[in-house]
Structures are given as structure tokens and as C-alpha cells.
Image (cartoon, rainbow, N blue to C red):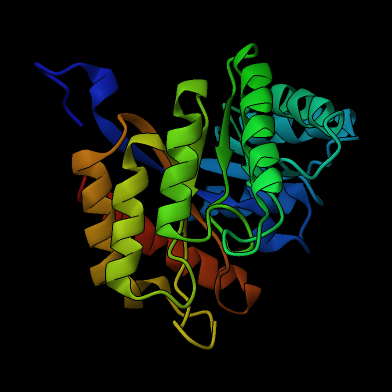
Length: 268
């Protein structure tokens, strides 16, 4: 993408990658091989199987595998739940992100949805997000919230409010099409967090059954959403990370990766 005459930081550009938990059953070596075969650029390494926060040696090995293949680490997908996890747990999470060379730590905005959480619990989530974001910033790492049901990012209004509350503290947000919400509502949610958008989880589910479908079948909405990000996004890199491929099959991942690369080429 040309940036002539523009501040490069103001231009939003995409990279394509994989969320490693898509293939929890595979070794890090096999995940790296698949991402390379698919022609993608980056991996969000999950903290549950592939790079647990209490295994620094494993994280170092995963980083070496990634870099040797010419790939980058887009994010560290942690399972730290702000306001719920023991505060001390974030130290291991941050250490692992540093070992991986990750620019981003994905965290979860609590453990209750916006309609169930109590005011004191909500305050605890916000305060903890500010705390961990400050710790991460000291290491040049950004904290970004998963956009997910059962947390404070389970609706467009709640996610936008959370980003307003924490924006000055550098907290950012992922985005993905929330299950069971109309296309128009998904767009509104995306628009409201665009200034704080960090990365995107990309997949195609049936809107009611959660059946995983080929990504190519969702071309129209995804090109629209990606166009919004390209035109009005936060500036800098936004990683588009494939997740939840049909039947957890590597061949379906390869097909989805080809689709994603074709789509992103339209914004290059």
C-alpha cells in the first residue's frame, strides 16, 4: 500500500494469519507448517496448549519455530480474565508475550456478560484492564480485549463503553462477528470500536446453528467490514486471523486462507 503524502501511522493495513487454537490438536511445528503452506504471515499463539504462561522454555521454542519459518507473532492469546483472574497471573502472561516477541496480549473483559455483571464487578474489570495495560506498556506490548459473549464486550454498547473507559490507558479491542446478531448490528458494533481496534478474528458460522462454513460463502459482509476498517480504522497494522475452520480440517484452512488472501489483496 502506498503512503505517499500520508502519515504512515494514519494508514490502516492488513496482515493475514491464524489463531493457533484453531488446531489445538496439532503441534506448534505442524501449525507453523500449515501457516507457511497457506501463504499467511502471522500466528496468534494460544496460551492454553501451544504456549502456556507457566512454560517459558516452550514459548521460546515456539518463537524460534515461528521466526525460522519467516512468520511473525501477531498476538499472544491469553486466558487472563480482567477482574476475575488472580492479579499475579498477569506477570506470567506478560513474560510469555515478551518471550514470544508478541506486540499484543489478548485478554478477556471479565467473566460475565454486560447484562449480568454487578456494578462493583464491572468496576473491577475496568480497573484491572487499566492496571495490566500499564504493565504491558512498559514492555511495549498492547493489551486488547476479546470481543465475545459472556464478557463486557458482548454487545456493541457495552464494548464501546468499555473502550471509552479505558482508551486513555491504551486498552484496545479485537472484533469478530458475534453469533446470533444481525449483520447490521455487527456493523454498528465494529464502527463503535474502530478507533480502538487491534486485530480481527475471521470465520464464517451459520448465524443460528454455529455450523462452520467455508469463508468464501461470506464474501459480501466480510468485504464490507474490511472496507470499513481500511477506510476508517485505527491506523497501523490490523491482523486478520483465521479461526474455527470447518471440521477442524487443515485442507479447509488452506481454502479459507486462500480466500482471505484474495480479499485482503483488494485493500493492498
